[in-house]
Length: 195
Image (cartoon, rainbow, N blue to C red; front, side):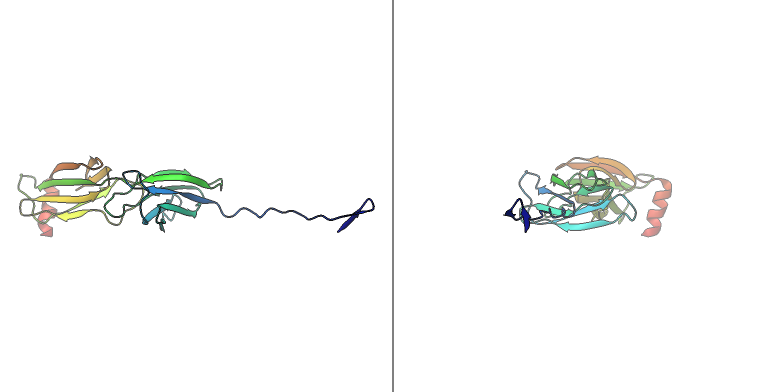
């Protein structure tokens, strides 16, 4: 208490709580625009080491994570039948929270095709991998072995740029892309050695 001018005056020192740590928050949507059910998505920082951290969303698709310092990329990794969202880039160097981020999962693309050697003969048992062109590493890239006719099918591919058997392709959300891979003489020789 403090006595002021003959009367009694009480005062209280008002302090604000320091702000909590900065966060990134938002929602993950299914391809149709509705909130996605609980799932896992990833955050990748730009500074070495290039770690990818998994984070879970709530039942309503909402997420809140600590804000990384510096540049970072954020994407929702496809859960259920969906492909991953587009990758968004942010700068967390100012330390301010980022709110209302929307990540939309996409309908996966499909790739069918055939692998032929340098003379046009189907390559049997050749491992074909669809490597996504996003900044976020994906440890579940679609893969398949070619059949007796050198044919393969890759399901659940992420739309956008990708590499299949070392060739670049552009995959369209929800569509099937047919590819023909003709191996060079050196690639054919290596493929024959692996059988």
